[in-house]
Image 1 (spheres, rainbow, N blue to C red):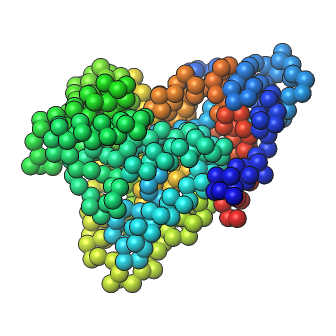
Image 2 (image 1 turned 180 degrees about the horizontal axis):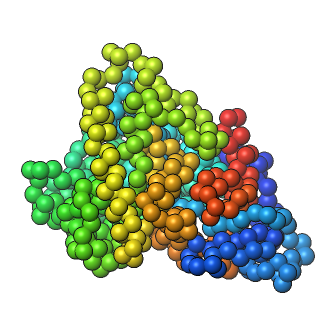
Image 3 (image 1 turned 120 degrees about the vertical axis):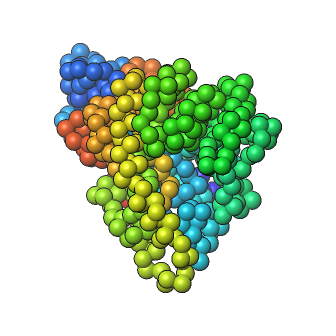
Length: 472
C-alpha cells in the first residue's frame, strides 16, 4: 500500500463525517462568529450551517432552517463556529527544531542537514495533520526548495491536509550555502536578467507567488537591488502571479513597494512606518504579515529557555517537541563557538526591534492596510501548528482586538492565498472550512485552541484523533 493510500485509510478511521459518505451535513445550534463584521453583530447565536459536499449551502437561525432528510447532524449546541484559520507565512522545508537552519544555528555535528531534510519530507503527512488539529485549514508557504511544489501536490491529494499555496526558491540578495543540498531554498541573484531567468523557471511550475529575500547591507546599492526586485515582480505580474517580499527595514520595505511588492511577509522593525510607506502600501493594495514571535523562538531555543505552551504540549508534533532542548545537552565541542555569540547579539537587539514591530502593526492596521496573521513556522522554536497561538497573543499585545486578530487569520489570510471568493468567512457558496470551538474566542485568545471539531472541505475531523494518530 502506498503512503498516500495508507494516509487515506487512516483518515477514514478518525474522520467523524465525510461528504463522500453523506452528501448533506447539518451543524446545528452553534453560535456563528463573523470576524468580517464590526460592532455587536459579529456573533449569531443558535444557528444552523448546512453543508452540501465540500461547500456551505445555507446559514441561518436553527428555528427557521429545517435539516434535510438524510442529512448527517452534528449537534453544536453551546459551541462557537469560526471560519477555518489561515497561517499566511510558513516553511515546510523547516521543522522548528534546532537542526533546521544550519545557517543560523549550526548543529550539523549532531544531526546532518541532509538527515533533517529527509525527516521533514517523510513527516509531511504528520505535519499536515498538526495544522488541521490546530484549526488551520490553509497555509501559505512563502519559499523553499523546488520540492515545495511536491508539498502542494501532496496536500491537494490528502484529505487530512490544509490548503497549501507555495512559492519556489527565494530570489535572494545573499547566499546560504549551508542549505544547499542540490535543491537550495535560497538562491543568490545579482542582476535583473538572472532574476527573470529564475522567475521563469519557477513560473513553469505554476507557483502561487514569487518571493524575494530582500537583504540590504550597508555597502549594497539599493537602486540595483530594487531593479532585481522589480524584474521579479514584473515577471510574476505578467503571468498573473503576485510578488511577496521579505523587507524588514523601512527604506528597504519602501523600495520593495516601489518595485511592485504585493505582500510584505514581515514587519518593518528598524523605524516607525511613515506616511510614504503607508501610501505606497495602499497604492499597491499590499498585505502586511507581522511575524512577531519568530526571532524570539531562536533565542529561547539556544538559551534552553524554550518551553512548550499548553497548546503545544497537546497539539505539536511529538517528534519535534522531543528535540527542543538538544543543544543544551550537546557536548560543547560539538557546536561552533560563535553560535551563542550570534544568538546573544540577536537577542540584545530584540527588545527594541519588537517594540517597533508591535507599534508599526497598530499603525498599519489603523491606516487600513490589510494585516494577515503569519508565524514563519518552521524556523527554530516556531513550531508548525500551535505557534499560531503565540503569534496571535503578541498581536493582541500590540493593540489589536480579538476580532481584529480573527479577521487577520481568516478574511485577510484568504486574501494572501488569493482565495477570498472561496475562503475566510461563513456564508453560502464558500468552501466548508470551519472550526467548531468549545469556548468563545472573543473572551480569550487561548480559547482558539479549545477545538471540538475541524471541518475542511466538508470533511469533519476530531483533533484528538488527529493528534493521537501522530504517535502511532
